[in-house]
Amino acid sequence: MKKSLFLILISFFTSISFGQVKYETFRSIKLDQNRDLKIQLPRNYEKNEDKTYPVIIVLDGDHLFEPVAGNVDYFSYWEDMPESIVVGVLQRKTREDDCRYDLASYLPEGKGAEFFEFIGQELLPYINETYRTAQLKMIVGHDYTSNFINYFLFKENPIFQAYINLSPELTPPMEERVFNVLSSAKSDVWYYLATATNDAENIKKNLIAVDEKLSTIENPEVNYFFDNFDESSHYTLVGRAIPKALETIFEMYRPISKKTYKEDILTLETSLYDYLVDVYNTTEKLYGFKRQIRVNDFIAVSTAIEKKELWEELEPLGKLAIKEHPETMLGYYYLGLGYEQLGEPKKAMRAYENGFLLNEIAFLTKDYMLEKVNKIKEDFGY
Image (cartoon, rainbow, N blue to C red; front, side, top):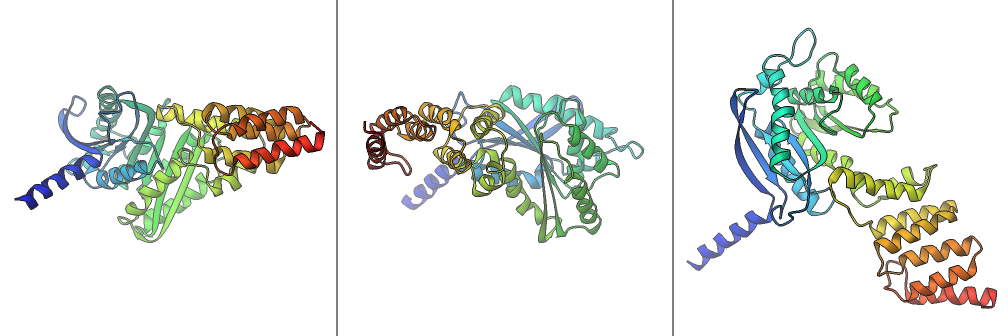
């Protein structure tokens, strides 16, 4: 009896530790039929009443929902992406009709056009009205449905900002259409494309050619990623592509990596301070909530500032660090270092002294700050 009770309790706590999965039936006027949905809400969704969440629409929800929802739950648990609402659309019996297109225009027709309107005019508005959603919307598809998700790119104001294309079986003009839309995009777009060495030969060959074309796009608003997975098939690539897509799309959400530092920050020709502020402003706009700037990110940017000797940028960086981490000596250290390098020793000494009174952090200790103060006093006779 005790063992049975223990197993029941374990099952209960296990079930509530993961994202909440709901099964809903949605009555569509556009399709004139019921559609089954799987919806995973973030952990503690009910408790975080003021928090909003990005939305990920998953076509082929019969087999794609679980790998997407599982990866989203795992990534967000480790804070590698924001917690998100995942909505799976089940299509096992309707897939071919849902994605039907005209053989002349290669645009949705009949049931395909109705399904397109169902997603944009019924499903997404319902999710927005029912749940607390942020601006960022993403859509995922595989082969036939992956071709379909690209139609949402062609709207004047696309309802999705991120597209995960898993081995899409593209219509003949799709390559050129996607290229033209991405080339002229005026707002942020994340576009992920994947194939594999053991993918269907016609799909693989076509997608490699598509990548060659899309790789030439120089639009700063477009974040394009491509993977050709070694030794994976048309179906097994899904398990590798989903985490890779989430990792690349949400790179801006994670702490600044060594790769980002070397390839993006050190090569930046504009303000490093503005870069840091813009990253967090953009993520706040997309994800719907304000995040404290990580100490790791302050250190990455300040290291680049020192390396490039852009000393005038340390003052605004220091003031920002004081605002974000007021209990630590980080901001006052940046102020002191900046003033010191710009030839203002008195202001530098005061900044170091103010920092000495606060909490140690990262590489900064009270002994180190005192050493900086004493060195200035010794050099200038204060």
